[in-house]
Length: 396
Ligand code: SR1
Ligand code: MG
Image 1 (cartoon, protein in one colour):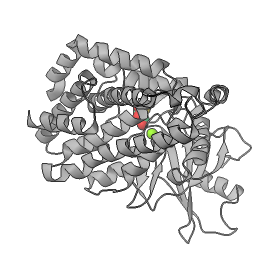
Image 2 (cartoon, protein in one colour; image 1 turned 180 degrees about the vertical axis):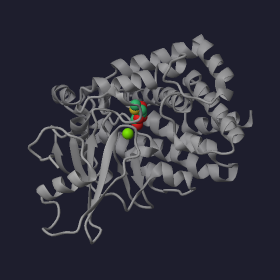
Image 3 (cartoon, protein in one colour; image 1 turned 180 degrees about the horizontal axis):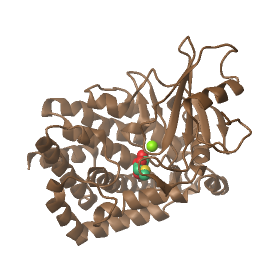
Image 4 (cartoon, helix red, strand yellow; image 1 turned 90 degrees about the horizontal axis):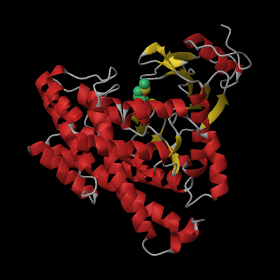
């Protein structure tokens, strides 16, 4: 039990996490505390500590390697600082949509935050057939406010450059550059897929037009520092219930293209849509429309009332920004769909489908949808067009 707030890094255990919570006076003296490690993500430890009244906190700690692979894949602890800094920034922009941060410690790579166990991870709820009617309204608002106020439209250009320094995140960006934008499009060791998919995947590897479009999207991700992104905005990074939505896990945050967060959200809504029967699908696809409409509405209000950029009054400029953002979001969504189907780190929406033939069938559809989103990004003009494409792919 050597971990202290003043000590050097050491991975916490359930008992040292309790010791730390006591040292930091999170609970009244003499409280009966229990702690469980509940981390089910790919990278970190997550401890849930509660007292006898079920009042709790979360201690998240970065490990010096990627948990999903093991110690052979070392990974910077600095991501905990990035996550803490992002959550603090987001708290100033969308306080209702992120967990409260109570304490951070760079040396221990920990963030102590609000216990959200009254909510459920949106992906898990969706898989059980639940719906979260306000989720995409909130996500649209979240995207608009976090992206606008950290972009050159809403933030003084000097201030933006200073803020960028806090979010230089090369190792986590490299994970996305490799796992989302490169490996799935080549015969790479990290890929992970059922042998029944091999022939479709070989077609994909041989498709030079597709690869050229992916290369352009990767270049955008590498070079377009438009705004501060969450960087990993899938439905496993969102807690929700009927009325509340909280976005978690921003350790991949960096300054990148605005369409990336939007595209990742779209892709993860589409995974769930692919698994639904036609009667139940609309409930999920509605989140595509609602998220984009809410994003456009809020972003437009901010553009009209809080812009710091002289050209934002110029006719046609906002329309250009929306159309470029939408187009790149469609391409990014296609890459995310392909990577979660055949690359490292899948989604439970697809992997939990049984029997095997049904899962393979849906994964073939996912590959086809991902490919078409990338290739037809110019033609797809609206979220209704995305829905039409989905229906077309499901009928093929
Ligand atoms: C090795 S990390 C794999 C994935 O987990 C995270 O959630 C990100 O999506 C990353 O790509
Ligand atoms: Mg994560």
